[in-house]
Image 1 (cartoon, rainbow, N blue to C red):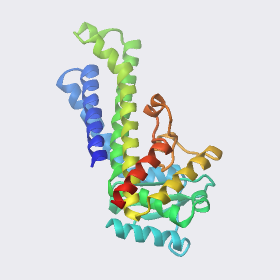
Image 2: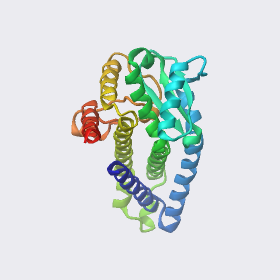
Image 3: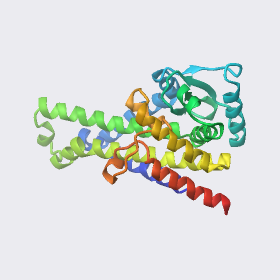
Image 4: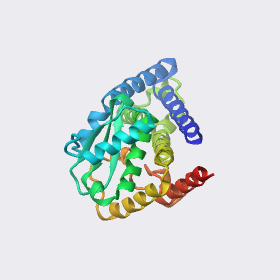
Length: 285
């Protein structure tokens, strides 16, 4: 519940920042309307095509129940516990160990695991990872992250357009009574702030998915072990792919310093383990 509240608060701040930037750069009510329209159009496209884009980006291949019977059985069993439709199952042909879930809703979801992940983890650890991904599907995190990413992208786009206007278009905004300070904040500060908020949402959803997986399997320690092994594996063989899709992965580049954490898509493994052990105590109680 706390993670959901934090996510809602961060999305609200991000949306408010979008409206502020639209107003500062485009002016008046019209600027706000245009900004909201940009966000709405980009969100719709990202929401509808997110599964196809992500799966194609990592060259994920669909596998049938006859090709991967244990994996399919695990996904089906956990989906039944989560009371969601069984997602489509994909394997990414890479020795790097990782996994992700995508799709616009539980009825159009997919879970993808890498070949390296299946070779690395034990059955219990793999179950913890699958449960983590299904928790993302249950919570519609793919939609939440798509909304956050597209609003942040729209803010960056508007700021870039403003920079070009300032360089090539002169000071027309100042001549019309625009606020130079607001323009400066919109061009320089707003894109950085939007990125920090977007990444904060990503980290919050990872904590929530870890907790959901622990409750789904009743075995938090298995996911703890999986995360620790994934961190060690990532140091030797990181997952290749578009950085824009890194928030989807179960294992990402977490940071140990406070400043580094602001620009990280994932919490540190240490923080995730601490969160899971807290859930374990709650389950025991």
